[in-house]
Image (tube, rainbow, N blue to C red; front, side, top):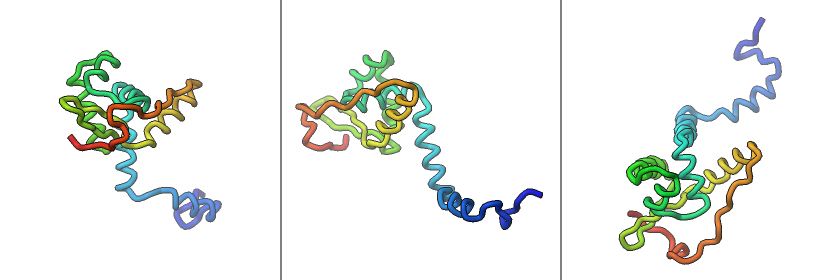
Length: 134
């Protein structure tokens, strides 16, 4: 006979596990965030931005894709609040707006036996000025 919702084999463990299962709306937001990271181009963008603030043209050249492709992917990441733009003259620089992304991907890389790149200290280009929305 299998346990029903009232007949757990270990009710204390089941009650503890139940507290870790969040409301459906939160689970959906979490799913969507991880789904955003399921695309190889977006992973590469996040890894690059985890190491350095960059503009679209530099990101495109670095990743070997077109500027419109980078812009599209950044728009998706920006919509979720994962990246933030900063205007400097005619250029818009992007940086990660969620330090958890670097941590998650760094953990994933370490799991695969790869040492992730670390963000260098912010120097020049107004990095200490904060960010302005574009």
